[in-house]
Amino acid sequence: MRFSQIANACLAACTLTSAAVVPAEIEKRATSTTSRVADAACTNGPTSRACWKNGYSIATDFDQKFPTTGKTVSQSLTLTNGTCNPDGNGQRLCLLVNGVYPGPTIRAAWGDTLSVTVTNNMQDNGTSIHWHGVRQFNSPGSDGVNGITECPLAPGQTKTYTFKVTQFGTSWYHAHYSSQYGDGVIGPIVFDGPAAANYDEDLGPYVLSDWYYRTAYQINSIASINLAAGGPPPNADNILINGTNKNKNGGGSYNQVKITSGKKYRLRLINMSVDNYIRVSLDNHALQVMTSDFIPVKPFYVNTLLIGIGQRYDVVINANQTAGNYWFRANVATDCLSGNNFYGRAVWSYSSVTAGTPTSTAYTDGQGCIEPAQAAPYWVQPVPSGSFQQSISALDVGLTKAQIVPNGDAIIVWAINTSSINLMWDRPTLKYLMEGNTSYPTAYNVVPTVNAGSWNYVVVQMLPQTPPVPHPFHLHGHDFFLLGQGSGTFDAGSASLNWATPPRRDTATVPGGGWLFIAFNSNNPGTWLMHCHIAWHVSEGLGMQFLESPSQIQLPDQGQFQSQCKGWEDYYSTAYWKKDDSGI
Ligand code: C2O
Image (cartoon, rainbow, N blue to C red; front, side):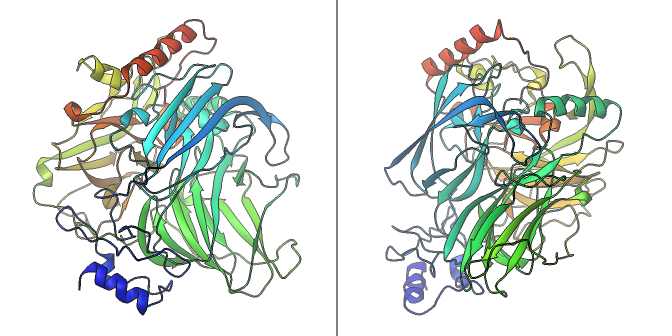
């Protein structure tokens, strides 16, 4: 049966229930050699979330094919210095987006064009805004990484980031200027599209973030001093849920959610922390997971869910328990060596009862600092294993000494293949490309990818004698295939690797003292940062960039690019704060 017939049959006969999502044939992925498309009559609704419209569905792999709606969604984000007091502990300095923390949700539909105008009205802070997980197909200049894809945006200046929404699901935006995002420059992204499980209502983004009573810049420098002494960074003071929580002395207020018996709710979980893995659960209610990062998965149920920094999971929650009040819990994952002084809580109440303090009991299962083993890919795509040993990039993660501070001192930093990334804000990689200059500084950690259409195989290996902390590795410009993870030293002969049905996502964990093995296809010309998403670690140099098909790269408008750089140089020559880390 062809896909269109299946889709028609399904419209007529099968209700797409959450347990049996879609017929097996629909789950097969569209590949470059086959193009399975949904029937145009397939209409998205509460019992047919796998459908979308105009020939697109959950079966469409968006790397291969995506709609064009012709619509441009415009949004303005203005960044300011301000104060905030999210948990009642007291006011502190925050960097706000449109006056709020976390920033407003950016919402568009699959196939739209987004045009986001960012105005930097902060004092003493340059910025660049990254749209985490967004592929930036043909728009690498909108990736928002100062020192790679643009010069920082100086205070008082405005930049418009324009890119096509080729994906669907949940993500976030954040500043990529040192550890700035920890002070507030974050917000959710929702791209409407089909979904792998059915639900009645979308509760929208659920932002999880660690929170410190000192600023991120302060904690970052303490973390750097501690690293040199072999110690961990400071604990977070709290965990916030959609920007609120009580504090450990009782002030502040919980996030509150109302649900109605008999309904199914989609919740978009996003870990926007700077340093903490977070494990979530809702008492008495299993979570039906249907995406990991932007990628649909075959729906599965868990009681507790570990979310690495930068990762997202969309889950469905069935309001089928005794009407009452239940705790939503967001605890730092101590098995990932995350640490905090208090925990995240929210109150979920059935609409038929009076909202009050829950007395519900926590699930106790869930251990191990690794992505959930149940996450089977929805789009099954094998990765060729034939010649991978010839085209493997071995990226060894360890500590080294390097000069990244302005006074010329060498300090202990994180490094990949002994090189700690250190970018010059006013010499972004794309500027080198514009000038036809291929003499990238060593500290830019530029690694060329293989030719267009071929597979890149990457082993990220923690060296022995480095602190055994897990690192959530994130790749820009691509989803990658997760071929394996393990402890100790990677050995292609003995490692258990999944070539046939590897999960796909944009952020995955290098286990402490272990390895992560991923692959991605060279299908997106650009220069793509890969880094540990622990803000302190990338600030301390734990990153590199893949330079992909340089002659094919669609460079941004040079006039605008250069005038932003000029604006930055003018500002920076007299700026009070100078760069004292990797820059990202
Ligand atoms: Cu959330 Cu470099 O990215």
